Length: 113
Image (cartoon, rainbow, N blue to C red; front, side, top):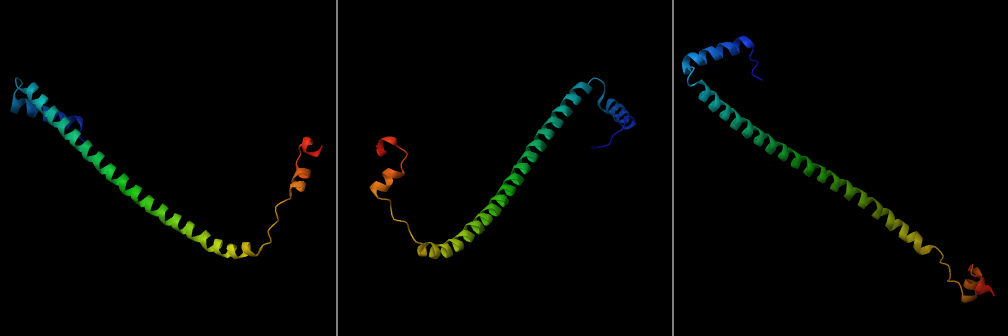
């Protein structure tokens, strides 16, 4: 991320020892570690929030597309159904079978006897 090599790190450590002193170095490193941890947690929290907003925006976009497709699909059959409704009304209907015909068509041997 920062692209710090071994030589740069060694210079930073030497300057820190000279400026802070070897006695206060552990406390300074602990404090720096706490700050770095807080910054990482804050950045992770921020990243998670951005990811959630992006996912919600993508979901809304997908729902909008699905709604448009569903409306297009539902509109298409209704026009076909109106055309077929006129054809269905003109088709002949079969009369229901009489009781004798129903008995002769059933596979029950007791009904035939």
